[in-house]
Length: 263
Image (cartoon, rainbow, N blue to C red; front, top):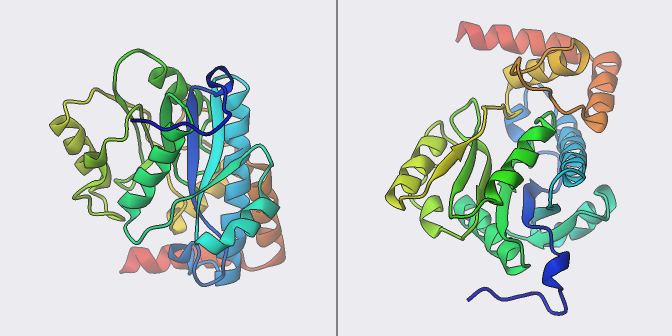
């Protein structure tokens, strides 16, 4: 049976809770797949900027759909970092386990326990994700009947997963951090006979190519998908502008891309 948060009025609870899966920004422990071409300090700065912009994106979506924003964070002692760096409208929930699938499931259970009719887990490294995709997710999940909403990433993972019930099987026997994650998740949904709504692909910023795509979106007017308008992330833009103008980042991106092409 779903438990309720004390003294919470059902009518006041937005129908969809969206939780960003996030780690506190610590050089050498955060966004390590971006090192190189970034330094450990720059990667941690990117993590903070991405989080701020993803949080703002959720709040922008909440102005057009029944959405409440959260960050499912870790490690457990890092709450002050998120309190200092995120808007007060973004609530915090602790979801820190050795297995990433358990982190996702815990976040979903906690969102549903807070009275939301649907729960969404969202990645923390897609600051340009179109706001309309968050709105679409909430609206699809508001329809009658059980279903899964999945936002596939271009690397084979997913940037978003939304459900109306905590289906543990969706997070079992998944080879996390590989190109098989989205496909395996769809296989689990098929086992559960769960209807699936698939969103357009988007990208995670976790390698040199993604950083270059981010640069093109921010400063060259490009978009990962021509028919989608990317979110305009103010904190990420400011940081990337500073790194490009104040360091040799542009050269590092080019050199790293050349080196990977030769491997």
